[in-house]
Image (cartoon, helix red, strand yellow):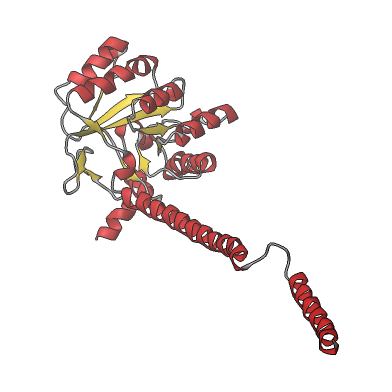
Length: 286
């Protein structure tokens, strides 16, 4: 009997100890219940790695964009036609629009954009005086078109002093940069007339001189939609690398879609001006 009485307190102590141990561990918690926390931590680490991969892909895409700007064409300094570099497609023409943005330049830009046809818009300073005109210029630029310099007042440079020529050219570069954030890299003199000074100044400003292969919309005979569309596509002067001169005129704007489609039907593609070798590229290649 005495032994039985001794066992009872001992058994009670053991039971109390067991209950105390169970209370120390939260109900329902065991080793398997810890795994979700571990998995959550693992997912967060993976997310960081994925973000790094995304960031790396963005940087890679940016590098690809730079590579894609490698020059594929160059200007012939005598004829101003476009010549392929290496294996670039030779069956191309360059589209250029002068005297922008006067009346229809934005319409022309929208037409070209809809047809995926790149071009250079050569601007005159007297057409970008007002805020409204500057907004048009910026919209054309933001659509992806290259903006060229066509002087401030479209004066014949041979009739001007060197200081006046400087004002005609540099003032346009300044205003284009103010509006678009970029200075022009192509210069086309009014009437195609340069001077020794204007040539040197264009180079000093980092611009390539550009004239043209052919153009007709300033001639009275071709001042209709039908006439200008026909001659631009069917002239005997059209060949690989032709540098096409057009203007911000009603009849040219109305005919532009027909001109682009007509040239494509003849097998020509349109050179992206951004892929034409510039002065900086030429210096690096020397």
